[in-house]
Length: 118
Length: 118
DNA sequence: TGGAGACATCGACATCCTTCTATGTCTCAG
DNA sequence: CTGAGACATAGAAGGATGTCGATGTCTCCA
Image (tube, rainbow over all chains, first blue to last red; front, side, top):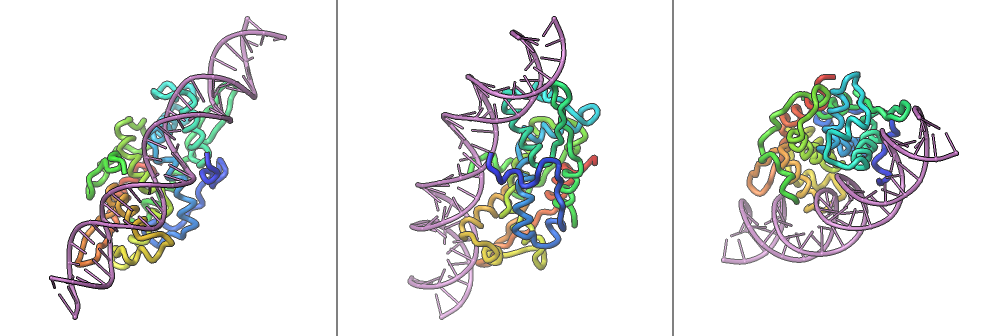
């Protein structure tokens, strides 16, 4: 995993900017946003995020998520890490289990960036 | 460029689904959406899209866009192609020049997918 | 204390992506 | 018709990404 993936420390959300279509995005901002979109731009990670969000109480244990895919446990763990490091998923360990929860603010900011000004 | 990038034919927009956080995204849908996000998930392409959208009359000529980057002309051409094939940019040739215009519906659909249900 | 189970990390491999240079295609002016 | 300019395509190189099996770490229970 290259360092540039985690531009935001886990838990931090996008301090967002004026909408994409309103004014030219500064290079620096573009380089901040792109990793976030890249984290989202994978079918497995999209489904993971969606599964977590739609789960009861808004959080899901890794064990639940593993079962939903035909992928190895380390692969799922890797994707969850990407989502977590990009600030899209919150992590909390309780006993033996690890639970993930969607950081709705980050998603909302992204949506505002893309869809704002339309 | 692998074939899977252009899931949508150029000009077609996302026939969008229920929001990401509302119900588990079906695998098929996730595989349809991911290429769109992937098209957006690059700092150069983010700035290209933003530049086009913010340009006078909502469209920009490739010659204008080339000047805004420290990248070779074929590289910009490549990124524009990715954005076009994903349905985010509309292409129109007038004389010697090629103009690109943002397909706002595609952006709006994406934003609704990500931010809907928050 | 020791074993089992839940996750994370490591290292490897194949594929994909970004970028480049070189070259092709199309259109207009002269 | 020929040259120049705008843009696209082709092919190659280097780095990034997705996936795996093997292994490590932590926590709980017996």
